[in-house]
Image (tube, rainbow, N blue to C red; front, side):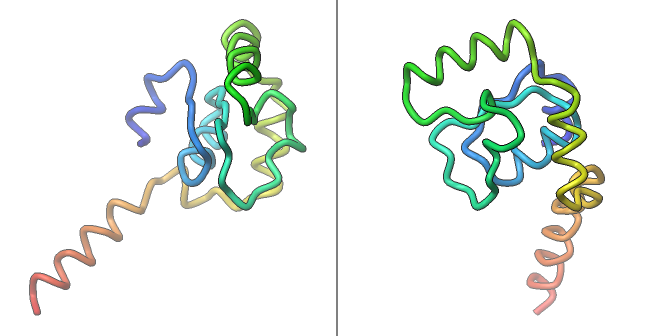
Length: 103
């Protein structure tokens, strides 16, 4: 995902680790049909869309204006994203697979 974020102008997601990584990297993001546990709307009304028409309006805004820097700053302040930026998930998965293959 880190490689994708490096070349992405915008991210559309349903939440989860993609949300955390994209906001950690400062990539404008919109969450459609949000199914996570984070109260994301409090950071910016344009982060979350629940209906198709609402999604199109908010996506248009995102593409024209991006998200304010305070959205990223506040999100980083509220969440421990140290692991998100280094992307250790792939390393943990590789170690698990190696361990399983050994048995």
